[in-house]
Length: 141
Image (cartoon, rainbow, N blue to C red; front, side, top):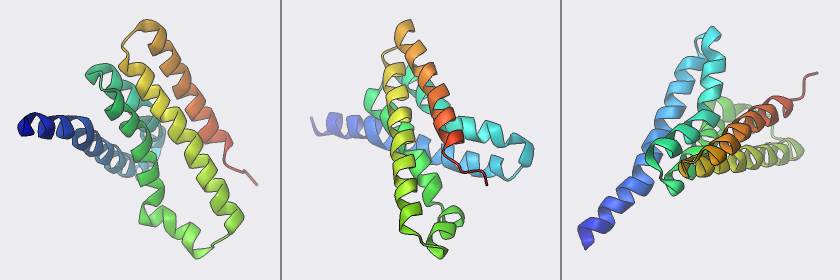
């Protein structure tokens, strides 16, 4: 019984966290190569869809949809800008932004894990929404 619980924990939590780490490392590598930045950006909303569809693991797909983007924004090179120029309003904006795209990414993975065409269409629509929210959340001055 103990072995089954350990395997389930590994399959449900550890594997998605490792996939999340792989997404962050891959995107950070890609972001440093200019032309491939869009591919790196699309890794975040597409990964939970792919993970959910392939594994049918609802919890894992939600983890893959939420953890990588938070890890990316906590990456020291990015977070240093917020810590150096600390502004409470900007921090609240960042938290709201992260919550929006975490919810959208998690839901996309969840719907994809149901592995039916109608839910896949919803998941793809959520990828598009994720991308739009991401792009329109930046203030271009």
